[in-house]
View 1 (cartoon, rainbow, N blue to C red):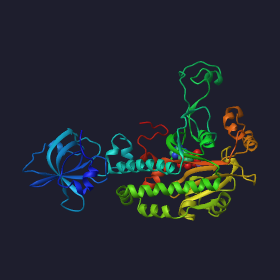
View 2: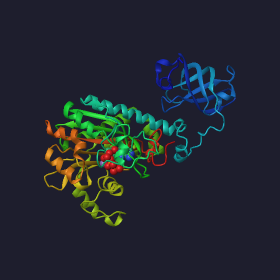
View 3: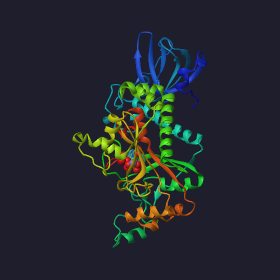
View 4: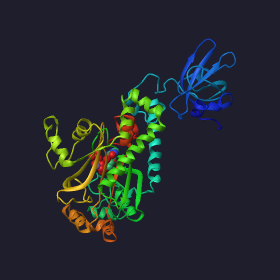
Length: 457
Ligand code: ATP
Ligand code: MN
């Protein structure tokens, strides 16, 4: 259908006085003696278009005025009677689809929880339209950021035989029937599709290292899968993952890249989604715009794990899980550090090697690794990264200590055998970023069809 996006009608001074066709869904209808008003949304902008109907000239089918009905309207663009921008004088209205009164999206505000039960319709609301416009702008900005800096976009496989040890529980990929009668696990996998145990990738990092140690700078941006058996507001079984990997890079370079990227993304959203952010600032997180503007222009903090533990230990009385050196940081500790101690994003670095993955670069102290997590207020961990161990001998020692199957990692070890270089990278959870910039508090509300334990609507 030839038609013009409402976004263009609303803002283009050139269009005043011209004829156009617009399409959209009815958001509101108001009636008075001489004129009636329809507000239409077509998804192209946060603002709706006011369609003015001169009742003396145009008789409107009542079905066209129902909330949620879909219309095509022919008419003229005129300057708005009140306020800035344009509105639309209707000359002909065609009903595309009726919308009966049991339409679940009614005008009064409903709860996010109710809307989670109708994922196929919740995008008709202001909140979800705003979330998904921000999400799209952020995704484009990610590609732009890396492309501008000479990073290559790599697609790592989603089906894998390696489990990126430690990152999370893997979903299995199998074509075997449920009732096969094998005696051993080995037999089961030997007869399975790939002839070995396979699953959905928890991270594209290992393949990212393959590409980075040839192309120099790469990133992946795709789904990762984790069979997390926890029902939190920041974990999904399927999430989108941005994983840059850089050759000739050490931990400070990784930190610098992460900070630069996050600020770039925040600025992109501030610039390209002002209406959406105003909405979130008013209805979801007060002070959001100020927070983001501030974060985009100030330095993030950096704090070594050992120092973080020292700060946290002083507050042990308030934590459900008191800390001591060697323990993993829980969400409550991460939030305390970023929300109360630093009051801004903070990179925690140099974690004990026992609580981090085998591939992280071992520090000279023999106790810690060159890892970093970026913690942000309201969420906690948003990025996890590290310099990778480039020394073949040290890597093997770390794998032996974890009783890993060396043969399964032959390719990974080859990268250390043939022209090994210092390198590193990080993983940003895309949904966590969208939560951070919109203020939405539940990861299920920034994903089209969220997948989590016992939930696959
Ligand atoms: P967490 O401690 O929050 O469970 P993690 O340490 O297991 O995360 P990493 O393996 O470091 O996560 O993954 C890198 C990033 O991917 C995380 O910082 C986070 O932003 C994101 N992420 C990890 N797991 C999930 C998940 N289940 N759902 C959504 N995002 C996730
Ligand atoms: Mn992590």
